[in-house]
Length: 553
Image 1 (cartoon, rainbow, N blue to C red):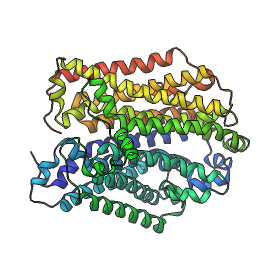
Image 2: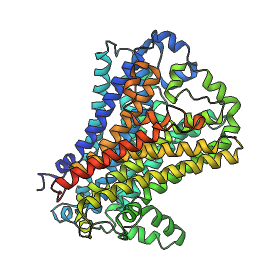
Image 3: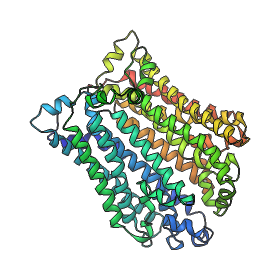
Image 4: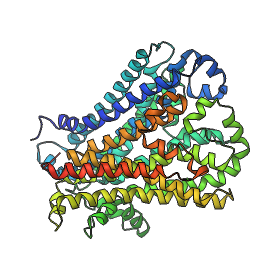
């Protein structure tokens, strides 16, 4: 049954996934306060840090434990989660309706396309603002709960900057979805832009003469003006909001001029671009197909866009990191050694003077998990997506039981994680060979197995959520929550050993705690990771065969 307005319907469709995401941030903030409260004198800890770093992240000794926690939340974890929510909402706002086959219902109502776009855009903006306000409240409550003060930090200012940056990424996805009608292209391209921005804003300032180029990336403005210490830079926020608005207008201009579709199909804009053979090959690769040669083959084909961006992007970055280490090895080791152990713990005490530590700290601790998580969680939620699009009857019409269909979807999720893991092994191996770094190829292969295991757990969590509820947003929210909370538990356990028992519950503990590039594979790591994935997949299949399937979201 349609709700009273499209705006309210859009809020109803998206609020649960957003709430799961912001709830994971609350838990991370609590774990962060718990971990940092055990380091002793915060002022002494800050004095051990290089001055340029404290200036960069906008914290000082006066901020104490509060500043340490907030620097992590606002400079890394928080922006990834809220920007990911914005991208998900932006990509699905219009293109999602076309993919689900519901656009024809919406356009038969007495409303113009412009009004439809405005309703969808306003709903997305409402949720994005609500997510950031709830995150702000959660951070403040976690600080107060540990007996600390918020007087020395500008949580509201930092929240404003993160909100503006997240709206830019969401607007990129919204514009691409409005222009192409492809949710896969919109979410994949916007996520790729997010990751590239994170690296560009983080690495370019380290290269002499390239510092100003970092300013072209939205991520730079999360901490460029040090809002935690200095308050809101309204010029930066205004420019970011203007860019977001301009992107929405570009999407509107394309949306009102093209033919809409119902269900996954090629659209005129893409059809015109395909007249160029070179562009056609790229678009076909990104868009994927709905192959029916097998459930696993169909699932992999539908994941082609995200695999191209996540797998291809991570392979390229890993290759480049090999020769880049040779270029910066003299500097980066001294740079890392200037930080206190409690900071280096966040990247597993990686020794940046060695290629294994360089790859571990720069890629395996953060970037590789993001790549495999995005791909595996997306694949894990695909079974629920079939219900949302009302195409599940096609799959169940094959001579297979409902359990067999679910198991094949679970197998496809594991395969997607494996593809990313292979890309990781190939990328590190090529970087090792090109840079003549001398790392063990057996240890590189062991690292790939653990990347696969990590992706299997995160994908299985999403599969369980989707199979049990039939809601893609619950699937994605559960997988993302496991990823965010699991990463935080392992990272903060390195800071405060009181958290180590809890860290054993995290898949990240079995992925990076033993430094696979240095030490190879321990038998219990893949046993725990793939065992946990198998249990969640089995639970998901059991829940799936016992419940009534949903006709619509």
